Image 1 (spheres, rainbow, N blue to C red):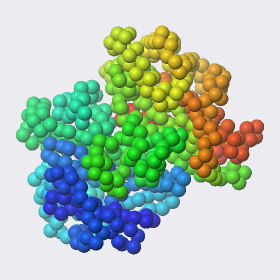
Image 2 (image 1 turned 45 degrees about the vertical axis):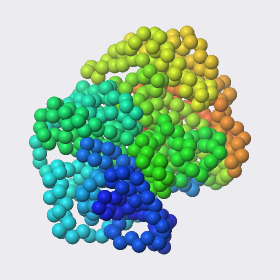
Image 3 (image 1 turned 135 degrees about the vertical axis):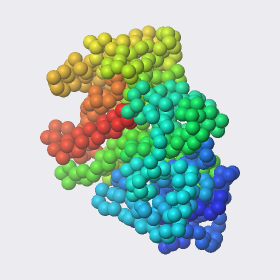
Image 4 (image 1 turned 120 degrees about the vertical axis):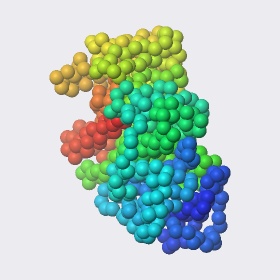
Length: 571
């Protein structure tokens, strides 16, 4: 059971955020003004008479043409503990507008849905107080008036509001939605979403990923003009916002977003070991993996960290194991970069700044008594400028720009990687006999050989050629190639915050999509390192028989990790 609870209440033009301890005392009360976005702290003696509702954390604020909206976490699953610190997966959210709808939506939501925190073992349910029929009627009338037909996740839709009112579909395909998005949305730093194009109506737009990277800003004139031009109805702006809210909700409730209020999920344990101030969670967050940074900008600047949560996109699985009576925790964390995220074929290669598509940092950790050991790897699309059309089943990659452009982009990418990880060992798995894959694979190799970048080493292993017909035993060929680098790289190991060894470098693995082949090779490297860690900690001798339970859990975790990387890439 939580020692402290968070509550929210609405009164006129402001939200009240309340922190309450286990004996019912208010330990902190903060207000957020709708118009100014300024927060103000109250002292503990303030008498609070407004009806309050429980939530788990603030994800941030989005700005739409109709006004600002607050995003709250209202359902989560406890996926386990890292050093006694809880880690949660977001299962459902609530989006509240900064207007007259807020208190009514909140009351109706909590009347129909039980706030839930689930764990692997049990469910903790907090039931809200009933709301009278008059309030429900007022709610329905305002919803109808404002065309608000989607506030919460699709899977909970019928439970929250009943059947969605039937209404003429004005935006018939996601291609049209994407066109409106391209013209109507700008990033908080002024970048335009000119690349967000959808070719097939059945695919979801990858711009939804970009929405969560930034404080969403819809320029009033642009949105109105764009939606009228594309759709031609005076009410279409409302439908456009409805689709945006639906897409944001779908994204955040996909099961791929995790957070902890007690431990930093954006940084590896090795990076955290170098921080001078480890108490302030928001001080050292790695912005590459801090997906809602811009959405929380209002709160971070005004020092209300008690109510907000930093979220990562990716994968977390925590398992408690035993080998011959020695208990330890095995954890796998994958952090997807918020830069250049998107769907397959819509996001390929790198951009001019060196941000690669499908870039993920994966860290495996072992916690044994007071010991912490971890090993990290990265994956990412081939760091050259290229694109592929989604119009055909097997599109041919097209190199963008000239050689100088790709060289500059590749240099930018590896300058950042070597600054973060020191030496980078590249493992390129593309099929050299395939005319499509070899186009970008050979370009990658030629640029690397030409530039001869210090601290960057290039290796090739044609996965399909070596492992065709399921001959995965041939992966030993690759292991022999990289064995020396793997031994030299080592891993991070500490006991009671005393560091005994550090990982010196990183493996960067890629195929075309950075999915199946990459996941297999990364799991091979991770398993080889895990054996060394278990031996060093005295848990398992390298020459003893494999522990069946450990092997099964290891394979399951890495299979789940592969799926977590697959889902956002295709949908």
